[in-house]
Amino acid sequence: MSLKDNVLETLINNEIISGEHMANMFHVSRSAIWKAINGLKNDGYNISGKSNQGYYLTENINIYSKAYLEKYLTKSFHIDIFDEIDSTSSYLKKIVDEYKMPCLCIALKQTSGRGRTGKSFYSPLNGIYFSFSFNVKEDFDLSLITIKVAVATIKAIENIFHKKIQVKWVNDLYYQNKKVCGILTEAIMDYESLKVDTIIIGIGINLNQHDFPKELANIASSLNIKNCNKNLLIATIINNFFNENNHNDTISFYKQHCLILNKNISYIKNNNVYHAKALDINNEGHLIVKNEFNQIEILKSGEVSLGSIRYE
Image (cartoon, rainbow, N blue to C red; front, top):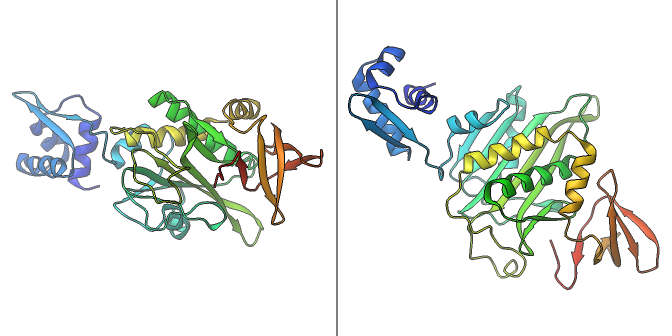
């Protein structure tokens, strides 16, 4: 790590520490420590000093920081942060083979954010856009990954911001009946074993956007949060995901937050539109419906609409 990174990590892990102490720790001059402190201030970190005591750091909750992410995350990640990128998930696809550890990519803005079935995901400034990847072990349960991500994200948002979040099967999150979060789960196969080798999960959260394109204006909104500890939110979502290990509790929580159960819906199957009532979600996370022909169907994936509004 650079001296600046070392100084930042030291400030994070100490309530207050003197420049002289850090100079001795890293075998550099106090002037070098002073330059590192100023560099961190220029990067947006809130660093203050107390006479005869030293420097202390007050977290700037609106900036991304590898050091703070590492502090909050319970697993070790390779972390890349960009001001702008085409897609955080596309980036991870390019680098997953370079690292033998989970990877995390964050961007302030995406120019080609991706959603399900090839759709684009609107990703301007004032949102949270990140993807994380991990290698799959033999005993890893792949069946509820998308459900687990949705539950992990809902729990993080509700616990941190105290806002009531709902989920539209299977992976779109809603606040006050409008979409505020999209989730994209992708699997990378090992061509020799023909088994899933790596999972990439992309999450986009509308944090404080207000101007949406015409085609999204009636269906998308934001959480209306101006000041957000972004590092804590991202880390909490990821930590929640890896801690979501009770299958029955996960399904129960998801069903409690599902906005389409016991409501009339429409869905697309084999390029045809069907009307139905959403009855339940089974233990595999599949949607059970009774269609217009009074038949019970189990939907494993697909596009669902509720009422007269088309939910993408």
